[in-house]
Amino acid sequence: MSSVRYRSGEGELIPVIVLIIINIVVYLAINLAAFSGGSIVQYLALSRSTVMTEPWTILTSMFTHMDFMHLLANMVTLYFYGSFLNRITGTRTFLWIYFGGGLLSALAVLLLSNPMAYTIGASGAIFALGGALAVLIPMLKVFIFPIPVPMPLWVAILIGFLILAFIPGVSWQGHLGGLLFGLAAGWYLRGRLRPVPY
Image (cartoon, rainbow, N blue to C red; front, side, top):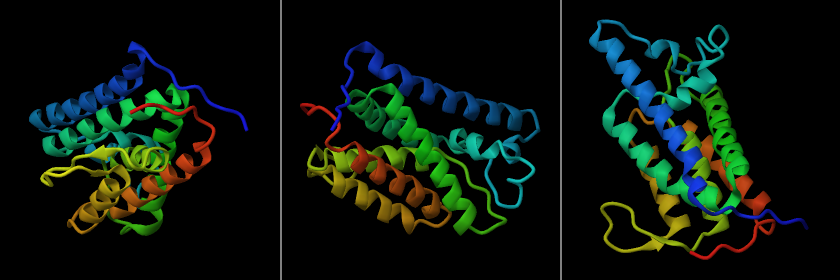
């Protein structure tokens, strides 16, 4: 079985930082348009009712946030999950998991959500990163706020998914699609990667 070498060095953070910058720029553009009396969210958000005429929303919805706390939570998680996974897999595989998870997340939304609902956010792609890490390094000890004790990464990701699934207005469908893609990617990569100390 072939192996995939992990990459190290300062370049590890570049793709993660680029993704974060894109999300921030889109957030600023949305709020600048709103400040000017306009709205561009409907041209970026994903909905079954508009996807056939606006297919680009499958991609743009992954970079769209209206609420600052939504953006902040996603970007902090993207930074930690993304930098760790990119270190393990290398940039090409990291981006494959990120965008693959985002696309499967969009498909789950289109198939399972209310056809008139609009969905935005990077959470599906980020759950794909978490799912892959949960398979590749399941026993890595992490903290999740506000629980003051460390827990295995796979437990933290499962708890996070379940908590978010019961919050009204949060797309559990998108989270599920991303998580399933990440788990599948992790199983595919398991055994093909060199051991990484952590």
